[in-house]
Image (tube, rainbow over all chains, first blue to last red; front, side, top):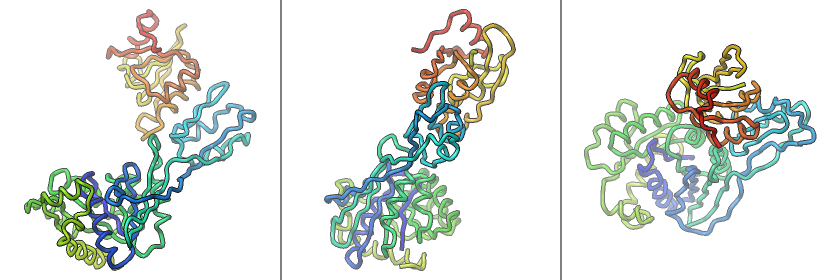
Length: 282
Length: 110
């Protein structure tokens, strides 16, 4: 099973749910945790450990100045504004390039070849028995987060149980993480902001055909706005985490709630059972 | 050739303060002649707007740009092309911006 923990809104507790679910399940089976929030990965803060690093590369054009006639076909083709051609020279903005290679195809002079450029890395660690953590990291100033997410998922693929910590939002990075997943948990909070962004993100999962359920975090016992949305969108509520000082203190100090409050382990095992039922995969 | 960024296709339309996302580029020769508008097809694009908009000016042979503000990548291209930039932020028409430029009242962007 590949399970995605997403939210729409940032800061609702995605990472808390993904980390504790993995930690609890690792008592019974091996779990791969994939941090797909590559612009601000922080799952590793719950699992400090030595990492092994592999670079993530993308294709960028390399220009043969002696062949270039400044005809401008490459700049005209580039949809990302990465090339500008002047009368006597051209300019290339590598951080705006998406690596499609179209400039190479349209160059009539054969002046363009593709070379590799590093845009981030994937970090591997085994922080505790039964947990393999794979973290995608996008370098500052870079824009190709889906590329780093794809690489991260490639390294995790084939494993029987992969839990992905998704980025917030609902654009390309989330789509890249959700596409092809077996199930999705949306972590939300009972506020107008949590509700609004949950509604948008749930729409993405619907379009992609990923079976989804909801975890309500920081509940004060009055979750009607979320429950109403879940009912109207046929989203099962899988778990409710109370607004509780002990939970907040554990999470805020980088500790796993299920380590500090072992009584909560059962709830995460129950959450996973419900997800298995929902997706038909275990 | 002078280029004024504008909200509409005519000289009576308001000057636009943003360069890359300006709806129109209005070209005019300082020696006279008609205004020549070019709609900016990148005005609503997600990204990579600046250098592509700059390319429009280069292709039209502009030597002077009158606008309110310009981003880093576009600035690099405009400066490399040797196009002079003058700042107009008075909220008037494109025609007014052009007139103030020819009267020497606009500040050159260094």
